[in-house]
Amino acid sequence: MTSLILDGMASGGDFPRGYDVRVSDDGESWNEPVASGKGAGPVMSIGLLKGTASRYVRIIQTGSQKGKYWSIHELQVFGRKQTD
Image (tube, rainbow, N blue to C red):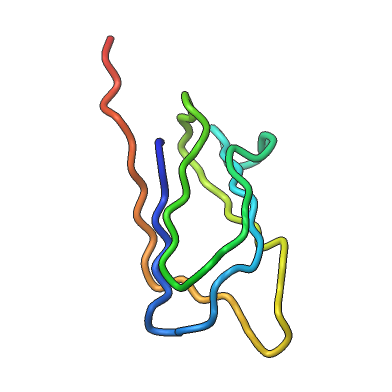
């Protein structure tokens, strides 16, 4: 994986005020964050650490704002084709 796009446009101000992205090969053992940051709007592009390749992705909300929630209506995952 090289990046993620989180789209919450249908919910306006409901985006993560802070987040960590973690990945796993088995869905049980999770690594340290491959990306961390603060959201600035309903559509967010998150670049991941170089060489991140896994089967599972977990996005953890680490910040909040009173009266606001976190809504993701579409998640896009981008990567590069691996070569032998």
